[in-house]
Length: 250
Length: 67
Length: 222
View 1 (cartoon, each protein chain N blue to C red):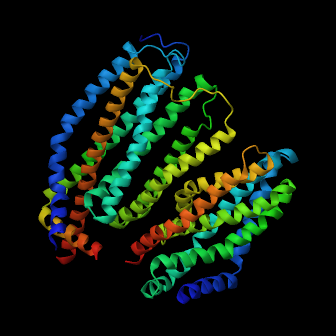
View 2: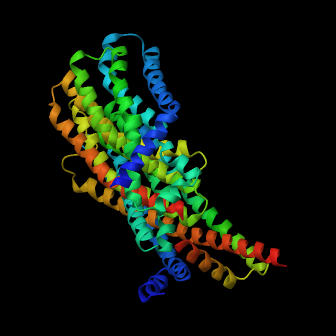
View 3: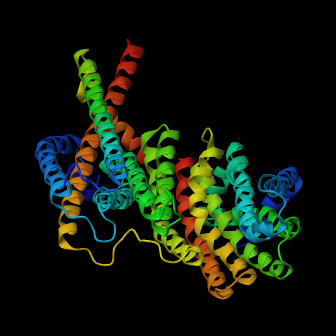
C-alpha cells in the first residue's frame, strides 16, 4: 500500500467519522431548531405582505430554500461521486447514496410549494414555467439515481454505477436548464408573475435567508444521521456474513 | 400577522402543512432507520460476533472490490 | 482502426440477420404515432400543429426500446469480455456499437418519420427539416442509449430502469429538434440557432458518453 492510499484510508476511517458525526449532531440539531423557530417567527409575525404577491410571499420562504437544497443536494452527490470514482473513498459512496433520497424529498417539496404558490398567482396549479419544468426534470434525475441504487445489490458496484450516472446528470443539469429556458421563451404567454421578484426588500429577504439557513442545517443533520446509519447497516451486513461463515465452518 | 393571511390563506397553510408533514416523515424515517440498524448491530454483537473479525472481512471485501 | 470498422460491420451483420428487432422497433413507432389521433381526435389542424413533437417523442421512445440490445447479447454469451481483452479500447468499442445501433435502428426510424408525418398532416415545407433534424439528433439518442444500456447491463428490470435513467437526458435533444422544425412551420424564431444547438448537443454527446459508458462497462466486466 502506498503512502497516499494510507492517508486516504485514515481520513476515510468510518469509526473516526462516526465519532465526529456523533459530536457534531446534537449541536447542529440545536442550531436547526433555533433557526426554524426564528425563521417561522419572522415569517408569521414580522414579515410584511409583498406589494405584488400579498401574503402568498410566505410560501416563498419555504419554496426557495427547498429549491436551493434540491440543487445543492445534487451538487453534493456529484462531488461525492467524484470522490468515489477517483479516490474510491468509502465515505463518498455513503454520502452520495444517503443524499439522494433527502435531496429528492426537498425537490418534491419545491415542486409542491411552487404549485401551491402558482394557483393563486397564475390561476393554475401547474404552469410550464422554465423553473418548475427544470426542477421537475431534476426530480426525475434523483429518481433515476435512487432506482439505480436499489437495482444493484452489491454496494461497491452500485456506488460506482450511481456515481457515473450522477456525474452524467450533473453535466446535463445546466444543459437541460438552458434548453427549457429556450423552449419556454418560445411558448411562454407574456406577462405572468415570475417566481423571483426583481428586487427583494430586506423585510422579505431576512426571513428568507433565515429559513434557507434552517433548511440547510436540517439537510445536513439528516444527511449526517443517514450516513452514520448507512455505515451501521454495512457493519450489520458484514457481521451477518461472518456469522454465516462461522456457522458454515463449525 | 398570524390569523390574517389574506385571501389566499388556504394555500399558505396548505404549503406549510405539506412541508411540515413531509419533513416530519423524512425525520421519522431517518431516525427509525438509525435505531433499527443500531439495534441489529447490538443484537449481533451480543451474540458474540466480534467487530474485529467483521472489520477484517470488510477490508477483504474492499480489497477484492478494488482488484 | 480496422478492428473498429470490423466491429461495426459485425454488429450491422448481426442486426441485419436478426432483422426482427428492427421491424419491431419500426412497428412500435408506427403504432405510437397512429394511436395518438385516436386519442386526440381527427382534427387535421391540431395534428399538423403537434406533429413535430409527436414524431420526435415517438421516435425517442422507439429508440429507447431498442437500445438495451446494444450490449445485451454480447454480455450474455461472453463476447463482450473477449472484446474488452482485445486491442480496441473499451471507449472505441462503445463508439462502434453505438454507431452500429444508429445505422441499423436510428436511420430506419428517421426514414420512417416522413411517412408517419403524412398521417399527421405535417406541412409539406417541413419534410426536409424533419429529416435533417432527426438525422442530426438521433446519433445523440443512440449514444445516450448506449450509456444507459451499459449502466443497466445484466440487471433485472433493466429495460424499465433504462427508460427512467435516460429519458430525462433526452430532454435537450427533444426541445431543440422540435423547435427547429417549428421554426420552419410557424416561425417566428429562425431555424438556424435551434438547429446548430441541436448539432452541438449531438457532437458533445458523441464526445463524452463513450467515456462514461466504458466506465460503466468496466464495472460489469470485473
